[in-house]
Length: 375
Length: 230
Image (tube, rainbow over all chains, first blue to last red; front, side, top):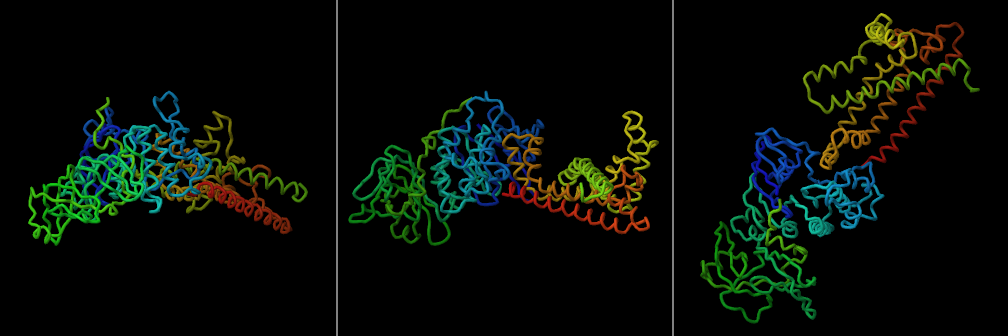
């Protein structure tokens, strides 16, 4: 387990973060640029030194201002995948990969070059120079290189930022695979909500140098009060589900969750896998009576449990349909339908409104249940 | 060698030998100084920076004279070397190499410093996160990446040493076969009545030598730059 409690001043900006991260989880540090995300992981890696505080991994203290402990970077055993790949230009991919491999081979449960090459599909690249690789290939090598140094923790600082938009999502399944195969704890810094939903178990919400919320992706995304910080436009609940069926005739995938079955256009996946669907609040509409003769495939009965009033024409509602769902409607609709806490409503979600790309494929059950602590 | 007369051959060989040793002596010191000046903040930074550039701005004769005082048989360093180790510096080619090294030093420090400032320190950080000690980072990341700059510095130092005159003649005199390098030989010929033809020959040789060194260094630097470019 990683625990961080640090204060660090950068001119007028003040970073004051305190959080804990469970072993084996993927935790996203999410926030706008300038919120202190990179500063936080730089302090964990030892690239910068906090003014006061403590950083520990398990029983190892990496930093403790009171005890005058400040382990140098190279003794921390923390892998770091930088925003820019930072591959060594004068070495081949192979030599980059093995640069940090511990020399004493008796290191328990350490990965070797063959494992990593297989996992990240790097075999054809081994003899090439970094400058000949594409952005995505470079980041895969950078991930492999960090893993081969046998780290206790892997830090990733917006690893997709330097990759062109079309190829960005090709890297995420690799990161998922790394976690599944190695069980390594990952801290993933990003300001892209879809990456968080795709990959993370936990979110740490960072705003102006402070942790404003921490919890599972589902919890944080269903909190109406956090919308200004998560994302105004893309705000919406995240539903954990199991892929339960596929309608071949109409090319529709079915996701079972606590409130029923959600149908998504064009989704054909392996039956039984865990998935996460991000239902944007803007894509949810409400009716008082059970709708008939509608083109909308997904209709769920629920109860209104929270209203977040905001200035302006629209507002967000939290509806319990067995799982939290968020709907964004106009103030006028709220008035016309005479909605209040406790009102029974039918929530409708168009099957075509859900973006298949943002479904967190292969999200492990960890996102619902945190693994028991290991010592 | 048929093109060069035996005397010319001797002069060229001695010059190359002196210049090579000059670079070998100056390189580690320049590297350390350049690293110190570009990577460390310390009290007296400006003073060290000034001292490094001193040989560039004071008359070479002064440098030669100071060396004579220090390395002469009665001097503090020269005395120690001759009594304890039996090495004589003054009035030998070794002294010529030291004089050239001192004169080349500021140029080499400047060239290496530029490389240190141009390197992406993110690469060194990345190496550290992979478990490499500062020592290992320096020799496996920093040095290979600044190697084009090191070569440029070496060639600059070499060329400077080939042309060294004032400090050399003051410190180790103009002894044929021992300290008479190209510029000193040229000087002697100019002083000799009827030595013009030989002087022009020697002049051409020195131009060819310097030009050859520069072209070789440019070729080498390009090759290495291609290797270490991102």
